[in-house]
Each structure stands twice: as C-alpha cells, then as structure tokens.
Length: 568
Image (cartoon, rainbow, N blue to C red):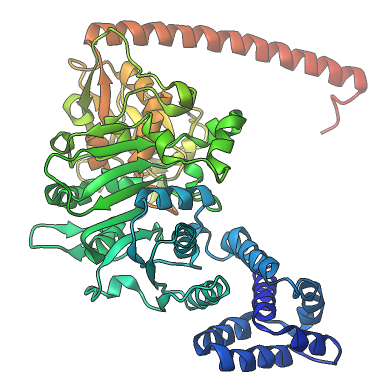
C-alpha cells in the first residue's frame, strides 16, 4: 500500500514538472520507469537542481516496475492541469501517506489552522524543526502570501524521504524554502533566530537536555525547548507535547524554569483525535511560547471540545472543519486568563485552572461557569492515603503451595476473579507483607491504556503484583469507598488518564498518583454519600442477577423446544 502511494505521488510530481510535449511523447512510445525518471530529472537539471536531487531520492526508492505502467496512464490523464496535479499530490500525502507511513506525525487540518491563528499576522522568519512533509510550512506560507505579508521559511526534517517530499511540494506551490535534512535536536546553536515557529514533533520525545546544574529538560520537552531556543527576543512558538509533560514529577523543575522565564503565553488541551491515525496516542496539548512578555501578562488556559461533542452536534463539528470559521475565539469563550504567579509548576494542565464544567457537557455558544453554593476544596492523594507498589513476579518461582498474587487478568469489571490466581514462592522475599492486600485497599492498574480499578470489600489472601498500585486510605481523613467512587467517576478517570506516561504502553507512576488532586468534602458527608451509592449498587446488582437468571431460563426453554439442549 505504501509503495503504491509513493509511486502515485512520484508520478503526480513528475507530471507536474514535465512539459506537456514530453508527457505525450512518453505515452506514444514503449517506455519503462527509468525513461520516466530520466525525463523528469533531465527537465529538473535545466530548471531546479535542488528539486532534481529530491525527485531522484524519492522516486528511485519506491517506483515499482510491475505497477508503473498502469499507474502512469491513470495519473497521466490529469497531466494537463497543473493545479489539479498539485491538489492530488497534497491529497495523496495527507491523509493517505501520513496514515500509513508516520501516523504519529499526522496533524489534522483544523489543528494546523489553530496553530496558524495563534501566530496572528506576524511576519519575518518561520521555523519548523520537525517539518515532516512540510504541511505546516506550506500553510503558513500560503496564509502570508494571501495577505501579502513577507515570510522566510526555514525547516528541518530528520527522515530523508519526508524531507525530499517536502522539498518537492514546496516547489510545486511556488515557494523557495530553506530546508535541511537533519535532526533539529542535534543543532543546539541556531545561527539565525526565528520570529515564529510551529512544531508538531514525535510524541516519543528526544534525549534529555541539561539546562543548568539544577534543571534538566526531560525528553517530553526536548523539542519545545529547542523551539524556544530558536526564537528571537520577541518570537512566538507553538509546540505539541504529551499531556504528561505538564504534570509528571521528573519535569517539575523544568516547568518552574519556564515559569520563571515568563515565556509561556498559553496552554491548550487538545482532544484525543488530534493525532487522528494513532489510536494509542497519549493525550496532548499545545504550548504557546511568547518571548518579551511583560511581568503582568496573564497566561491563557484553554481546552478544546472532546471528540464526542463533534459527533453529537453537527453544528459544532462544522465550526471546526469549515475553513471560514476561526477556532481560537471560540475556545477562548471557555478558557481563562490566569495570573502567572497563580500557576503551579507541579501541574500546568489547563483542566487544573479551568471551571469544573467540561466543554463537552454544554453547548459552546452558551458556556457557563459550573459550580453551586456548596463549598468545594481539593486535596492531594498523599495527604489522605498511602500508595504502595506491587511485587515483581518476573524472577519468582511458581508454587502451588505459595502465596496468591493478583495479576492484571485477575481483575474484570471492577471485581477480583479467583479462578485463575497464580501462586508464587515468597518465602525468600524480605518484607513480603508490604505487598499484602487488605480490606479497603483500592487497586489501580498502572500499565496499559485501559485503567482497571477495584476496591477490596472482604478479606482475600492475596498479594499485589507490579501490574497494580495499591491505595490504602487513611480512615480518619477519607472514606475508602468515597475515594473509590471519585476515581471511578468520569472526572476521576480523566485525571488518571492525564497522569499516564508513555505512548506504546502508558504507565502510571506512584509519585504522580500521590500528587493527584482530589475533590474533597467533609468525612461525614463522604461516608453518607458513598454508603447511599454503594447500597443502590448492591440493589441494582441483585436485580440484574434476577433478570439474568430469567434470561437464562427463557433461553433454556427455547433450546429445549428447538432441540438444541443436547447439541454441544
């Protein structure tokens, strides 16, 4: 599939550069792919040496002889219309090629538009150190050309094929960008500072950078820090980062460093489909840098609607996808300008500073501040509970006489399944008691995208495996069932998702779970409300069991009537 896409793209690009007479002559003779490549390269040698090199590198890698002729005649029918060839090339590149080659780098059109809006009408030098196929650079250049504003574009891209494709596309759109095939993170010194920058780098991040003896920039921030270094004294930058970078413990010192520099102008939480072709992608946000900010300037905290809102309300979906609609003014209606000194380096997630009502729970045009007359407060998990890790069973020996260890597969639908509990010999393990599960403990899976949660309601002779983190509530401060229901709620699940780290296998660290801020009410109310909900759940479960038993009886009667009771 990828080879056919690359071949189609190479053909469309080649047709765009060739003259009509050359294309017609190729159609009338017996030719092969080498003849086509030679014709394009000979043409480019006369007109554009840089494009000639990029076409040679891109086309020779993926043109296949067995499908060449069929595709040649298919795309040749559009060769008389240069504009259509350019549009076809753009469409083949995104979303088609982006979907199959580098899905983690794909950026939807609405997000490119938002980034463009964040730069305003600023002119000068634009820089993208993770340019990919050049979509963002082209969008900015087209916007400035439409407005008659001067612009110089500088890009870097580490992937050779994406780089050469970016070069060819910029030529087709009539731009002369300054483009290099290199890793921007290895270019520490930027000779010419940029006036503005947008970067959508790989969410896997890069190597950590030692900013000073006491400040380390973690891999999640490496591209953003590079971008910040590339901006001039009044430059504006927009960079996508994983949400974990905004609150994980390892980057707290670096976030404080950014706050002290007063360079963060806005943070925008993005919906899950901002990485459209990578279902396992972590949640992401845009960080907007602005150098030269004044001491009293505030920081915008904003959140885009969740994908569910777009699917349910067509008018809001069109608001994002229609080219005539500006996104930034809309999301500012639900955002908040926060005083810089109110920001806490511990957690820079926009949701931490926004009203509790979610944008997805309301109509965008009638955003209202949520809340009621009841007093509300927040408290950190470590203030009301102890977090303990499970035991690593990788080097333990299985033993039928050993201790039962709870693994990830043993928890289903919030309940422990005792049927297939594995037993291990823990006799040689020191302090094994610290892994023992007690009544009232809340267990939360710490590996994988899906978060499993359960509470121990009765004594079970089990130990916790390293697939889980245990939460042991201090009964004098918090009711364990209240804490369990808070974590089980949509708000609690979202908070847990926000502290997940990693892309292929998301993880929850004990240190981050300890810092989780919880909705807190008086202990008496906690116990009362949790008891009411627990009682209702027990009643509902009993009713469901009765209904399921009725279903089984009706099904068994049907099987007997049609003669299926003995067929197995």
